[in-house]
Length: 180
Image (tube, rainbow, N blue to C red; front, side, top):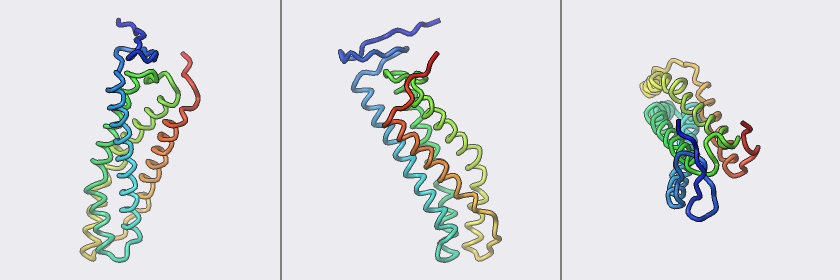
């Protein structure tokens, strides 16, 4: 069994406990990638919210149908990709920096939020996208059968709220260390 060792990184006096320690250059690179992935995820969620809003309240059936078809085509995989990229860069930062992966509450909560959101994308959002695309095609063809689409308001609302909480946690870093 491997034991964790404390390593001083780059003469900064910063101690990192774990299997590896990121140099200052690599830490910055992964932090930038992490922030970009999180920003992309938030941007995609905003796009999803706009498409849901347009699909529900658009000026005519053609615009509403196009919004639903675009939602089905472009929401799930870009959102999941940015979420997974955010997860991977966050795990690397957690393992390779002084913050640790499960050493501080704010990091652990962000990890759980990311895992829950990525799981919800796969389990709750993706399976319904074929029906959303079909509804969009029906709207554009003028043969709309009104399904229940009000539930589409929840994914962007939940995700944007969770990502806002994760962003605030990254800045504020509350609650201190996890006791072992």
